[in-house]
Length: 467
Image (cartoon, rainbow, N blue to C red; front, side, top):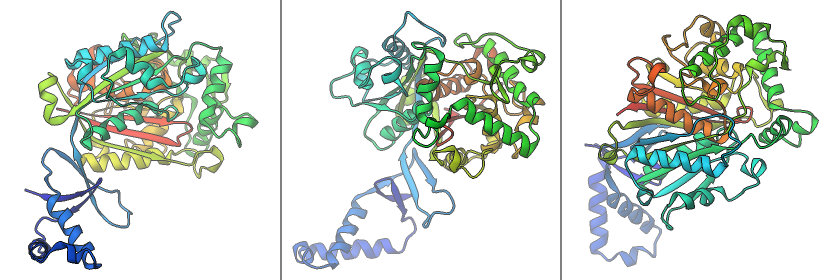
């Protein structure tokens, strides 16, 4: 059994240490000789630290244990309680003129609690992922705005997380940390966006606020143009073609057709995609872009030791990571790589103690077709430059070697910005439960979610496993 000292989130391994007997002896001796005398000397700092160590032992069974990524100055372990997903819920994704942001969020939250078999009074904390409610629906202070009609207790903290398109994934991470730190037993996380309230040019303007407004947006920067530059550079550097981009579209539309909650439930052929002349930002055409979507998704998180009490099929969180990258596009060293993805994935894989080859199914952030190609490279599923050919060869299809975006992805399922990262957890949970219907990946035991914000300045990766 490993006995360890927890200091915040850092942890010092003391098992089999010859220092322990000496520390105990010194502490007891100092106690007998009156601790107040030592408080007047610098030596007392040592004894006080010793007292903290001896009183902070904890059995780390059923807790996360992971090492920091290589390259840190010192190798320290971190420890926290293990977390499971015990409930999921979502709305249909699409265009809903008759439903408000509040309607969508409450519907998803209630479905998640029902799925978990719990009541609103069982929730200890609520995290909301939303990017631009103040723009799309003129509403701020969104977390309590949604928490109140859900019937949450007055003592429940309601917190809004804004991290661009990674708002949802970041909210899930905060919920995991709340449970892992012991501050909550059951957490509700909802992601929501109501986008179809303004014309498309306004949507583009609102989304561009996730970029560098002073240095780039003012001179014409938009996200379609940003990812178009990434696509063009990937083509130049690795020989990626329009056929490779089109293969992402065809695959994700086919998957979306099997998803009753998807925004776009229509298959397209390779020929139709390649013949499309509707240029958004060259080389990206209309079929290369994700959808402007209304929708909400929700998950209930619980400490693992309680999960089997509440869920018939709990899914465990075995790893997660969040990282950042250069904020502005002009600051990036390589337009064909998201450093935040690489770093977040590295942290998640180290925590989960697995490799990319161990992942059975993934939901990645395909806001544009080139984004999925770059993502599967940065996550380590294929070598750099081979994301396009792998997709064209069917490696990422439902029956391929590593299925990607069985939900239809942002491309077909839809992209209600604040909800996307939460919905990725919902989809992977369905896959690991074996409840994904026609889009079910056979024998899926480990799943990964990948959620980026802005032009890749934020990335959140979660790894889940069948409980």
